[in-house]
Image (cartoon, rainbow, N blue to C red):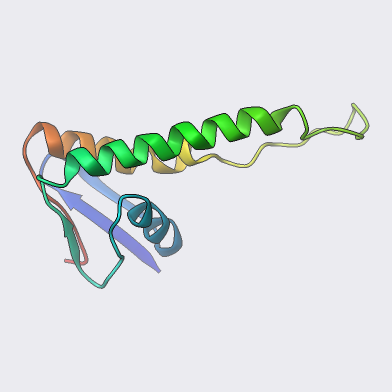
Length: 108
C-alpha cells in the first residue's frame, strides 16, 4: 500500500507503507489512515529525522570496511540504500513546511 504526504509548501511525497511507518516512528508519530504533523511539531520531527540519518550514515561507514571481508576482489556488491536516500524527499517536505508554517498531512 502507498502513503502520500501532502503539504502546500512542497510537492506530494508518496512512499510504501512500511517506509512511511518507519519514518513516522522515528519522529514519534503513528501511521493511521489519516494524520497530520502540525507546524508546531516540525522542529522536533526534523531534528529526530536528521539525527537518525546521521546515526545511519555513521553505522554504514563503520560497516563499509567489513562488507567485503573474505570475498574475492572481483565480486561487486552494491550497498543497500541508506536512510538518507529513503528519507530525503520526506525530510525536504518537512523543511519546506517549516519554512512556510504549513502542516504535513496524509490520508486525505
